[in-house]
Length: 444
Image 1: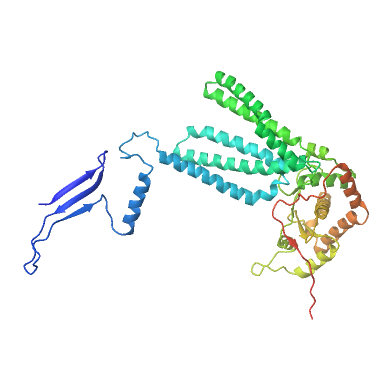
Image 2: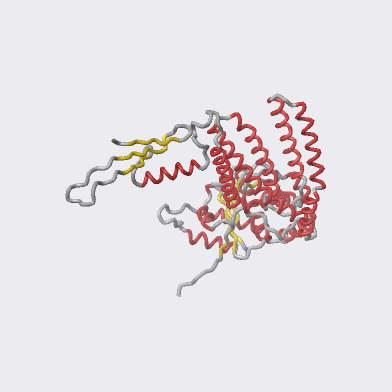
């Protein structure tokens, strides 16, 4: 007779089967007597090999988070704690990955564009709040995607707000008292004087609003209204900041006005004209529509690619040596190389080793002046794009002479300092830059 014992959990799920085999008589040539029976343990859907071990470990791992007898021991609408835990892990992971990627990709651009990223942090935070409010109305799949997106936006908010706050604090420290400014700010945060009053007013206002808001339409109307007021107030606060360093947009406004009207704008005048959100690297003449783009501090290969098409296989440039030598000779007394590609309407600035902030500003002013000259020729009917290398090089030479042959550039620097601009801090590069060392080797 074969004995079979089934073992089940409280929900009736089969966990194991024990099979007892009867004893069998021992062969005559064996003097040890009859053989005892054995008991075999069989598990449901038992498999052999590596898959069996992995399946067993998977069940044990899931069993740590699931109720006993799951799914038979719970109702159909039971929200599994495992799903909540996995969703929390997913949100946290996506947020941390977004933080790393954002800091790596745009970390250098936060300081020059601190006003933009400070307001962008509020936009990210409010957008994350909207996604959280929308998530209950969506099915499970889109809800997970929405909540992960809100976690990414909050991570971007944290990086943008923290980085831009440091730059703005350095701007407010007019007498070099950055440490004192931060210390007083931290002390106010600890004392919670201003924050406590604002929080209490917000709680009181929220209590009054909640007592009158009951329908979904009214709730969403008040939410959109309050978020709009929040963004409008922060936009006004950011626009009121008068930065004294020259980023790309402010450099366009200051240099185009000086070259066109011989007038130097003050930081206050520029703050009233500059855009908070601006495309990176665009060139504008006195706030007009963007007519070209520019790069600064990027590798030399971008400038070389603008001289002539490179060979598809070798990457070499036809007549590249002669063109590069002419450009290097043109800017032999400068700490930069500038070339404007009229066909693509993109200018390239390659910085030499030791290029300071004033040299970077000079290179940007020169490129803006050259691009504007090309634009003027094109508006007059002249086709600068069809001209060869020599006419374009002559245009670069003429623009450089107009800017540096007289004391025009020195006068511009002096008047900008008198107007309150900080010319010792370079804020034009928004990506990790590179420098070139020019040296000529002669054949023995």
